[in-house]
Image 1: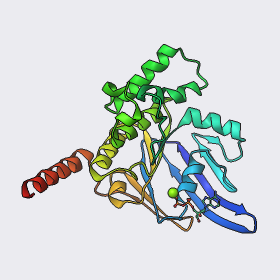
Image 2: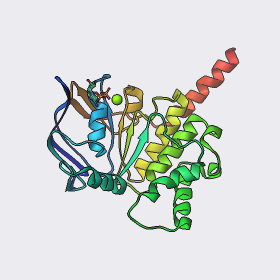
Image 3: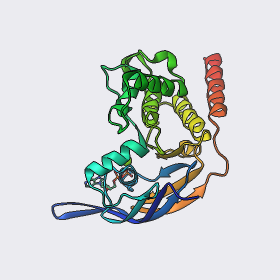
Image 4: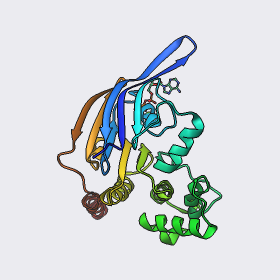
Length: 253
Ligand SMILES: Nc1ncnc2c1ncn2[C@@H]1O[C@H](COP(=O)(O)OP(=O)(O)O)[C@@H](O)[C@H]1O
Ligand SMILES: [Mg+2]
C-alpha cells in the first residue's frame, strides 16, 4: 500500500538572528492509511514542529515530504493552503471554536474555504452529519459556552472531518481535559479510526498514547522509538473503570 505520509530526512531549523534552533534533525518515516499514531516526547523535543510540517503549516528546511503521493516540500503558501483544505483536518488543544457561532456553524466553516462549491443546504447537511458522528446531533444550535470541554472538543473534531480529510492531525487534543473526558474524546478518535480514518496526534501522556496503534518518541528533534502498541486502551473499558472508581469514591465519602 502506498504511504499517506512519506518523510525523507526531514529537517527544520529556526533561525532568529544569531541563534539557530535545530528543532527537527533528520526524521524519516512512513505512515499508512488506517494508522493511529501518537507522537510523544518531552517539552521542546520538536513534536509541534513536526506536526506543523506534517500539517503543511510550515515547510522543512531540508528533506522531502510526500503527502498522499504529492511532493509538498517546496510548495508556496497558497499551494500549501489548498493541500491543507483538501487533505487534512486539524484538532487543537484549546478547541479553537468561534464563540459567537453555533456548533453547526463552527463545523461548516472549513467548507467555505473548500474548492468544491456547495449550496448552503449541502454545507449544513454535511455539518450536521459530522456532528452526528461525534454524538452531538442534538447540540447543533448550542454555542461553545453552552457546551462542556469534552463536547467542545467533539465539535472541533466534527469540524476537522467536514471536508473528508485523508488525515486527522491533533496536537495535544486532551491536554485541557480531565481523565474521563479525555477517555471520551479518545473513544471518538478510536471510532473514527475503526471506520478507516488515519489519525496522527501529539501527546505527552503515555496512557493517552496507549489508545493509539503506533507510538513514536521524539528526542532532540530525532525519532528515537517507533513501536506498535501491544496492549491498547479501549475507550469504553477505560470510561467504565473511571465511572466505577467515581461511584466507589462517592460511597466512601
Ligand atoms: N517559531 C520558532 N522559532 C524559533 N524556535 C522555535 C520556534 N518554534 C519552536 N522553536 C524551538 O524549537 C524546539 C522544538 O519546539 P516544539 O516543536 O514546540 O517542541 P514540543 O512541541 O515538543 O514542545 C524548541 O527548542 C523551541 O524553543
Ligand atoms: Mg508542542
